[in-house]
Image 1 (cartoon, rainbow, N blue to C red):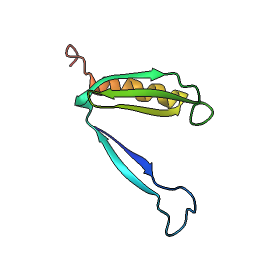
Image 2: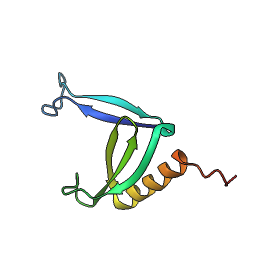
Image 3: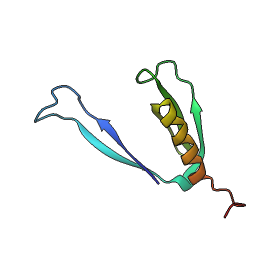
Image 4: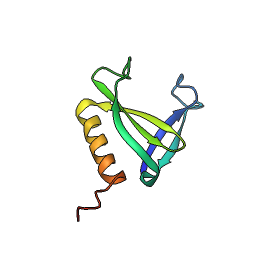
Length: 87
């Protein structure tokens, strides 16, 4: 499974009383139908590359620096779609 934290609420203020919170999202890798790099017009930060993880119910757009993004795609594919002929 893949767990990540999604920011919700206002990001202004940053101190006590801030309405910002983190929601934990869980994606079961057994539910994945595809994982692939994608090109986005505006990356979230310079040097970042995006990849998409699709389940039957939802698509998730994720990003990381280029080497990490490629490693994420490779690792997610290996774990979500194991080769039945290996091992």
